Amino acid sequence: MRDVFTFIVGGKAGEGVKKSGLVASSMLADLDRNLFQMDDYQSLIRGGHNFAVVSSSADALTSHHLLAQLIVCLDERSYHLHRHELAEGGVLVYNSDVMSAEDGIGLPMTSEARPYPRPDLRVGVASITVLAVALGHDMAYIEKVIEREYKRDLEHNVAYASRIFELAAPTLAGRFPLARGHAQGKALYGSEAISLGAIAGGLDLYMAYPMTPSSPILHYLAAEGPKYGVHALHLESEVSVANMAVGSAFAGARTAVGTSGGGFALMTEAFSLAGIMEAPVLFILASRPGPSTGVPTYTEQADLKFAIGAGHGDFPRIVASPGTVEESFYLTADLLDLAWRFQSPTILLTEKHLTESCMNATPDAARAAWAQGEMYQGHEGDYKRYLCTESGVSPLLHPPSSEVIKWSSYEHDEVGITTDEPGPIAAMHDKRQRKHESIVEHLRGIRTVSVFGDGGPVIFTYGSSTMSVLEALRTGGIQATVVQPIYLEPFPVWEVERYRGSNPIVVEQSVSGQFANLIREQTGITSDRHIRRYDGRPFEPSELAQQIKDLI
Image 1 (cartoon, rainbow, N blue to C red):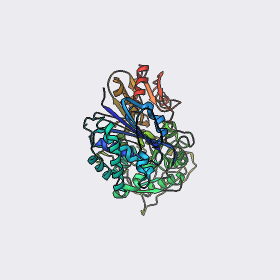
Image 2: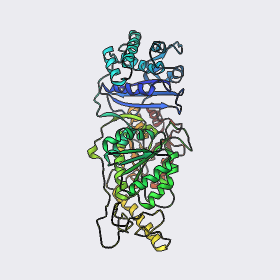
Image 3: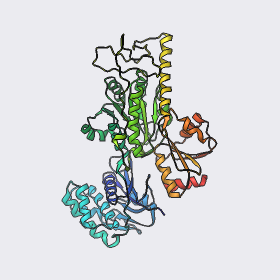
């Protein structure tokens, strides 16, 4: 049986639930255990139901588990929603000031917090105190954790935790002694890994209008970016963001933008502008359920076709999707590199389940890609921004310069002068198509597909669902070959076509099977075995393992 311990804390928005999850993760990290934290919250500032799931293991771990050994319910709604997720032999602790129950252990969390300021936020401290007691820690350890994690109003937090410790210890002390693990690296949110990958890839400017679940990237780069010479700008709209990004690239700044589906819809005209101007801009598209405003704080993979087909007209773009938090670090740097290498817009396509989840990662900045682009070296005659080359990639030059530099939003000749003549129009199309072919040739020389395992059924998946599939196989003791295309446009047909005739299982979060359809369109590989989830929630490993077994 796998050594997985899961802690769930639930309560109202405004009760410090996410902070409790973060502190729980830090406590389990003190035991060198591998971590996965998932935060679930409604699109409400106050009153909505929030909960954090923190799973840990001495062994590898790539997803959360909802079957929990310890559940702390700060309000009655949490009790009714999560009581059925209690594992055999598990313990449920509830706030006895707001509810009564026949099962579980009641603690007066609210009344004990009332002597102190902001008792509504204070109850979060009760949840991590309960966890510490259950893990067998003493009050001295809890005080160190509070000093580390709850520095504001420290004296009151310690006094409150001490009282909860006294109440919880008689029934909970040492209930769940955990083995020390051998975790590598630190726990990072996907948004942090993406931000750090962009920094390692030479990012100068990040621009965004906040939109869940991409907003944490903006927050992180605004706070941490200046240490690395990176500036984050919060502009008035997604239209402004995308257009200013193209202008920044013209000036020579390595620029990335971030948004979700609705925001990217507003950016698509400027995305086409980047296509015809051959502007190297990285677009980060962090998906949530749609269409329109959809479900703002949950996860889905229904923007795949949108990303691949965004914009009007034919022009090359690169779309890739990371399968883990660590992979998102390297892939972000790679896509910034490829944008400059091929002077084309690139898209990092990800989902809420990755950007807002936290797991162990060991990113190495020295391994991150960084490209300068093919800079203009000077030649006889006028500088030609769109010089027709064999590779389709033209020389770059940025102001200030004695040369005339012209980027055009209209079809143009090699210099950049607007034209409606058939010859130059066809020549520019041919040039951009040669660039697409150069991109394909480059991708053939790098890792475009990850393969995990050997033997058993073939399972196709991509993006954050990769984490869920790998954890499901561990949980269910299933032998399989997992095929995860990292690059989705251009699609690595040369790697995937070897699985023709395998009748793969296709796992994705799309009601229409966009990923399965992409595989069929690109390779001819068809399947009658599909596992799809599209209720806004990520796959749960135990449930997914059973679904895979049923298909096998």
